[in-house]
Image 1 (spheres, rainbow, N blue to C red):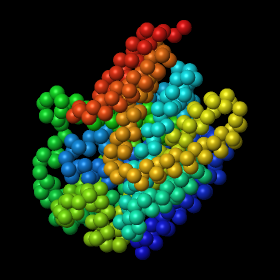
Image 2: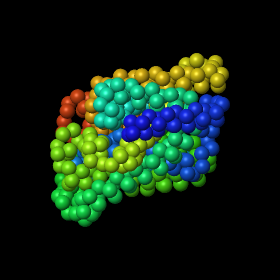
Image 3: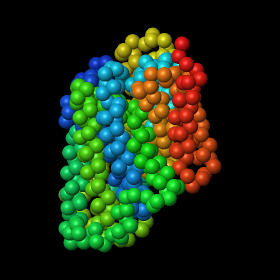
Amino acid sequence: MLLFSIILYLTLTIAIGYWASKRVKTAGDFLLAGRSLPLLLSSSALFATWFGSETVFGASAEFLKGGLLSVIEDPFGAALCLVLFGVFFARKLYSMNLLTLGDFFKVRFGRRTELVASAFIVPSYVGYIAAQLLAMGLILNVVTEIEVWQGVVVSALVVTFYTYIGGMWAISITDFIQSVIIIGGLIVLAVNLSIKAGGISVVLNDTPAETFRFLPEANFKEIVIYLGAWSVLGLGSIPSQDVFQRVMSSGSVSTAVRSCYIAALMYLTIAMLPLFISLCVKHLYPDFATGDAQLALPTMVLSHATLPIQILFFGSLLSAIMSTTSSAILAPSAIFSENLVKPLTKGRLTDKQLLIVTRISVLGFSILATIMATVRSNIYELVGESSILSLVSLFAPLVFGLYWKRATPHGALLSMVLGTFTWFIFERLETSWPSLVPGLLVSVAAMILGSLIWKNK
């Protein structure tokens, strides 16, 4: 019955994607849903941006190991990103009427900067997509006992299909439905487990006080590591195409701004549920928390929950992961077609041809991510690596490009290249300090110095 419910759910998702594809006539419809989403759809789409495998699997596993301090990156950093985007970026970018984030670098700094920025944006998504596919593969492995790689392939086929045909319209509509299932499923499971444990107070009292420590110790190194964790998603996901395209799909600038705040509030509250559920699992079934912590929740639900709870839980899990995966596949495809292929063909492609290129790109990135998902195993690491690349290469050019009139193309290019190079060097040195910190500092310094030395003509 559980397997049948999962198959039925996947089939319905494909059907919704096919129905949404009727609205896709142009590349703008495919990438930004015609910039016409109401507040409800826009907010649910933004909420679903990261609420996937790293929140339900990765964050809950890290939380059991190290408490709140180990999950600052997600969910707290992710919520911070949405707030900052609403305050400082949504209004300015929406008014520029851009199709992709790469278009900003073209308008502000020129074609060459557009190409380089796009080359940095595109690779960061492959690992992120792989993390989501790996999570779905783990779910199917637990439920059906097929090999994880087989589950990855099945998941990739489903998500790629409805993204390929429906684009942002399919993503937005399925995101709304999936958000309802996510919230309902997690609430029911949390209530059910807390009742079994004897109440919320019993679970919390059984948890060491150190688990809930939110602030670092008063020493310089720990503070730097703490701020670095906030920055991974909090700053690193601001210059990301998936956040950009969800905000820019809103029907108006006020809808774009308000949806950021609503989604941030939803994310921060709903993301607490997997953390609480993991504490309940540790309290009730400590044996499940000793193995692979990423599998603790699904294995426990399959072993001890009733069938309706199982259907709700696995339905919410698949909903969370599929909504995140679909936009993650569309994001690099949009950049690749609009900001790499289109400039290199010197505008000779028609809108219909460009739409075909984008859809082919969806297939290409899905294949690359599927291959990566079969050889990597840590979901939380895959997601973190993806956001850090955007942080050290694109954050400074985006911020200074919007808020500093003297920012120049030379400064932007130096910032991207030197920031990434510095981060790469510190990663290879394997120090105990977060390598994103020197990478970001060098990126900011290069942006300022490069703009002051090579001024605009």
